[in-house]
Amino acid sequence: MSFQLQYSQYNEHSILVEWPAIIDEKILQDILIFKEKIENKYTKQSIQVISAYSSILIFYNITIDNVNDVFLDLKELYSSQRNLKQIESKTFRVPVCYDPEFAMDLEAYSEEIKLPKDTIIRLHSDPIYRVCFIGFLPGFLYLGGLNSTLHLDRKLTPNLNIKKGSVGIGGKQTGIYPQDSPGGWHIIGNSPIELFNPKHNPPCFIKAGDRVKFHPISKLEHQKMKSEINNPKFDFKTLLLND
Image (cartoon, rainbow, N blue to C red):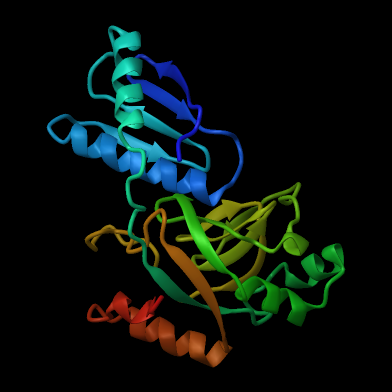
């Protein structure tokens, strides 16, 4: 399946390619396939391709002199990807503790959306989410598939210090803060999993296109897992789920 794409020059070193502006599984797959094709074609050049929900931004290490030639090259590359197989993905079981100690906003969030806390936890941990892309912090997973009854706009006043591992909801999205950071999402839990470590290869063991299934754990289990994960010998493959 192919889509009608929009190509534009973002600046003198980059090109923006846009899909229909919706969160969609088929669009995500199309983006990831095209991203991989671009990276494979330009292996000898220093380019960087950053994906989002419905776009990719391609950074070139040289000034783009003839943008129309670049557009044509990208269009030809995109047209050649029809009927290609989907990008391989993995499914990870990510533990989350919804204890009040970690869920700083769960009470207020529960009142705002008029659902009991145990229902929120069940609805949040039931789906298998798709990792749409990674940003605004290294290792921050933007997850698609949040139950619509849990949708709530971001806070008007962000928190200045969201703790590492905090699990939040912002708009139609849910995600995990990979490090201490300011943030405006509603925090409903915490995961002991370290999502980003520059000393690891790769630094983030989950990639765009992978899936995540949240698994509720107790406060005691959170403490135990945090100790295990701090062990350099911890194998993140133990979090893999069999599809």
